[in-house]
Amino acid sequence: MYISTRGNYTPVTASEAIRLGMVPTGGLFVPAEPPSLSIEEILEMQGKPYQEAACRIMTLFLHDFRPEEISDCVAKAYSEKNFDHNAITPLFRLDDTVHFLELWHGPTAAFKDIALQVMPHLLSLALRKAGVERETVILVATSGDTGKAALEGFKDVPGIKIIVFYPYGGVSRVQELQMTTTDGSNTYAVGVRGNFDDCQNSVKEIFADEDFKKTLAGKGCGLSSANSINWGRLLPQVVYYFRAYLALLEKKEIIPGERINFVVPTGNFGNILAGWYAGRIGLPIHKLICASNENKVLTDFFQTGIYDRNREFKQTSSPSMDILISSNLERFLFEISGHNAAKINSWMAALKETGRFEADAETRQAMERFIAADFASEKETMSAIRGVFAGAGYLLDPHTAVGFQVYRKYTAATGDRTKTVICATASPFKFSSSVLQAIKDRDYLEGKDEFAVLRELSRLSGNPVHPGLRGLESRPVLHRTVCERNEIKAQVEKILGL
Ligand SMILES: *Cc1c(COP(=O)(O)O)cnc(C)c1O
Image 1 (tube, helix red, strand yellow):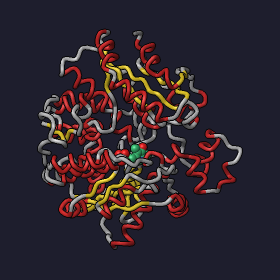
Image 2 (tube, helix red, strand yellow):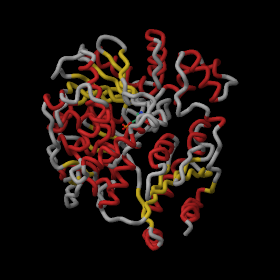
Image 3 (cartoon, rainbow, N blue to C red):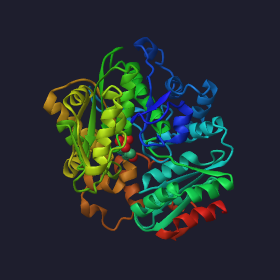
Image 4 (tube, rainbow, N blue to C red):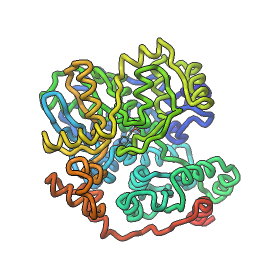
């Protein structure tokens, strides 16, 4: 069963936790008692494909799903059609101690695909299990990347329509075309003359609009979200931590039971939390290294015990980590404080009221056992991209480069030589302007549009452009609607024929 981090809800089944997304009374769902795997059971997964590990691990957490249902979801998600590498998350060996875990082989070239390719199928099943007959409408506000990953994930999933709102003119040309060229009979992408906050606020208002939800229900429709705090998005990420460990075993880089480190470029704390759950259920992990960019609220928290979001928000070259409120941290704190909902309630209340809270000594000690944390400046990030490309001919995207730089600081400070896997969270092609600027210089970009930059990066690195970004200029634009920021609800009504 799944329980609330704030002790304010009755336990629910896995399918209910996925259907509800977050606890309706506030808080997040976590497993009441995580399962566990012995090292022998982990070793049994050696040499088997990604899909098999995915079924094995997800089954442990999804008690009210039948094994055939899970394997069906997994087969649909991790297919050759969706991923351009048959290992799904291959490793790149940098040297004797460091490997990069490439999490960007999915349709939109970033790691969110791994969860968003499978979660819609889990949600569709969860709705069916709850006897929900109506059509479910997924509303997403996006600053660019999540929108496309969600569109691809929910495309053609039965019983579901997905509508994405993005700031018109506020996303890159590549991001816009990624969204507006999406096919599928149930996908809608709408540009909004406003910024991301306008999109996000309108979507939140719609979710809170009881009259509107009643009208929808009368037409046989219900609303849901694809938010990253849904357990159905976290769970699929646990799998690749196991897969990385198994791959190191298969390559004889480690011996059975040897502990390894993972470095995770972190924003909302979802990815690294999945790593923590991997360790919790038995994967031999030494340290999880939490890497932040200049929005280093998590670095400060792990180093001082004080979480303080009252600071300037910085726009960086790793935009998916530009976050000052890390939602999934709540789950981690609940877990390491021994499921102490009273502590969570007081911290979250303080965070809401003052933007700040302080962990007690006992919690800090528990955090330090699992997590090391540091950050990389913009300058360090760019020099990490340049350095790794010059040394190994391997291109890092800015998020991954933050991870690499933080790893370097970590080893300099600790001397730890434990074998380490760095999560590569996006393809360098997804952030090609920043990457090209790092390995050449600013002038080199002048006069080149985003597509010329992609081609140039491909030429310099000798790698083909990521298939999700290839040929975008010539794909037909299928979504042309643009609306004012006060018309978002009207657009939803129009699309649904209300
Ligand atoms: C979302 C994202 C992150 C941050 O992941 P969290 O789970 O939010 O910590 C890092 N890198 C990239 C490329 C992302 O898209």
